[in-house]
Amino acid sequence: MLISHDLSVVDYLTETAMVMLNGEVVERGATNRLLATPNHAYTRALIDSIPGRAL
Image (cartoon, rainbow, N blue to C red; front, side, top):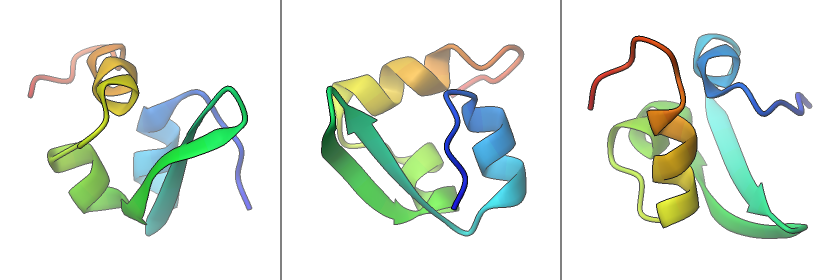
């Protein structure tokens, strides 16, 4: 288990991921799919905060 606010680290180290907001799971799945096509606005905001990452 890895807990991180840094999705670039999550992308590098994991195959599956879960995004939580205020203690609730808002999205989960394969890391590459989750980062490529996020469904939740919070996941998109986290991805947008990765330096140098363009969607």
